[in-house]
Image (cartoon, rainbow, N blue to C red; front, top):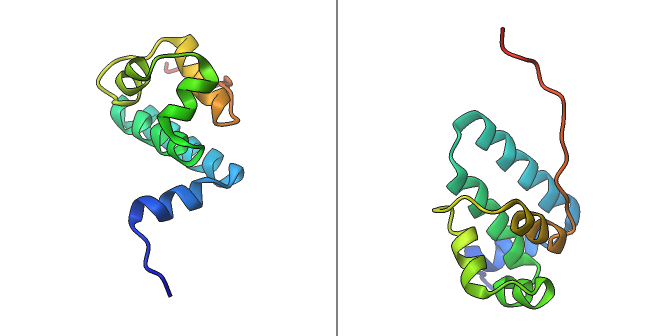
Length: 103
């Protein structure tokens, strides 16, 4: 039995579209609860790595690697068009859902 690194296992697990979508949904829920964008962007970066990495993402979207690394670092607020392009690369899209309004 060949041992794998966590990064290798993570990419293999996240290569399944349903698993990636469930993982990102959980990350979004965590973001909504905790308000930490770095955790959400780390989850998105994991999905990107499973799809071929930042190089493949840059080629597919026409965005620079620098922009993508900065966006996926979680240290900056991504532009909506950049976030949408990244999610499309992962086979996902942004959707809205109704929530309860605080009284």
